[in-house]
Length: 223
Image (tube, rainbow, N blue to C red; front, side, top):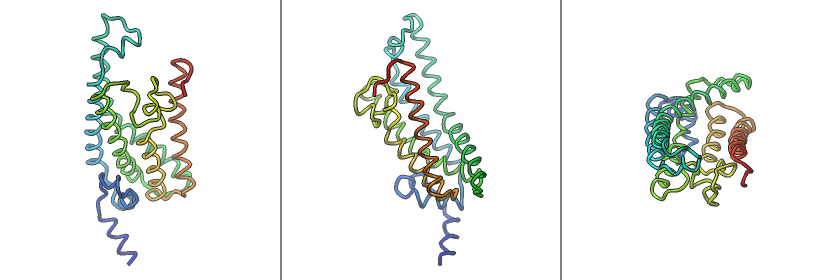
C-alpha cells in the first residue's frame, strides 16, 4: 500500500497553486517528478506583472527626494522603469539558480542524494509565494501610493516607516517562503529538520542584515 502511494506520488505533477494549500504534498511530488521549465515561465510572467505595477507606481518625487537635478529626472525615471522591467524577468531565473546551487553544495556536504533538477523545481515552486507578494504589494502601492520599496505586508509598512530598513525585511510573504524552504529541504532534499531549519533561519538573518546595511547607508537606523 505504501509502495503504491509512493509510485502514485512519483507520477503526479506538482501544482503551483497547491503550494498555497498543500505544500508538503507538492514537495513529495517534486521529489519524484520534478518540473522546472513551465513553472519557471509562469513565475517569470508573474514577476513581470508585479514589477510592472512597481514601474507604474514610480514618479518624479522618488528622484527629487534623492537630490537628482530636475533636468535629469525624466531620464532617471525612464531608466529606472526599464531596469525594474528587466529585473522582473531575470530575478526568478537567477534567484532559482543561485539558491539551488548553494543548496546543492550543502546537500553534498550532508551526503544528500538530491539532484540539482529537484532543487531547481523545489525553489521554482516556492517562488510562487514571493510572486504573489510582489503582485499584491505593488498593486496596492499603485492604487494608494506611498514608498514602493516598502511592502504593505512588512512591519515597516504596518508601522508606516519612511525607510524599509530591518523592519522591511520582516515580511509575511518572505517568512512564508522561508518556512516552505525549510519544509522543502526536509521533504525533497531529505535534510534533517534541524539542518533544513538552520538554513532557512540563516537566509532570514542574512536578509535582515541586508536590510540593516541599507538603513545604515541612509543614516541612523529607524527600528
